[in-house]
Image (cartoon, rainbow, N blue to C red; front, top):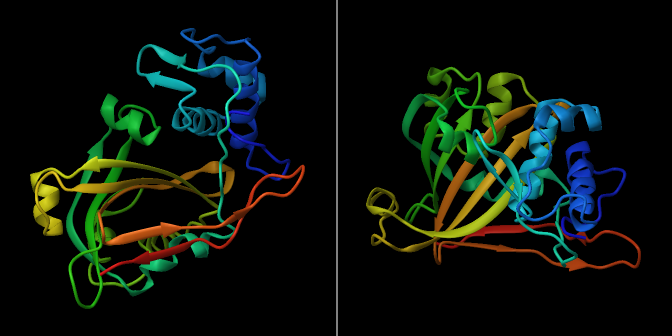
Length: 261
């Protein structure tokens, strides 16, 4: 299957993504064609637009569809292929490496999403977010990463108060908003650092970096925060071990996230 095996205990958006993926593989939707409009899919699956968009984003991250404002959701791939979606056992394990890193807030502002940013975040054009850019650093040594966080309904003054704290910024946002993070979806890629990013991280322009996106959601898949983090090479490692059990989805071991200074 293209997206992996969606267990009944999986989030609703993941099960919907699985069903659409199976429809694509079965030829119901062919490469190059458009999926039905969002409202039609919402009616078909009996879900909100927020849940449906989370499902479409999952398919987009797996390369099965592309999305473009004013055009719709285009099918990019069909047929069976091996692609397994792995999840950690707990939220705590996923964010534990930040506990000994200091937050250094560089900039806080409020942004209204244009078409490009809305496509990246998986939200509507015009949606408003408080944007927080910060470095994460150990007590000694260079910064481990540069992050940009997008948080709906957060007062900029609260965001500035995160400066100098230790721990996960996601947890800080939880406390500031009285929210509860129930799921984290993660996507990783690689990119080259531009001049400003390289200067902040004290590396040369064009240095390779791990690019990580995370979507933090609460009850009913309400979006709590979206984060984009850049890790220069040799400053961060990400590893996990998995076992395959006959007839069952992959069961990942605790994820080890460790900054390398």
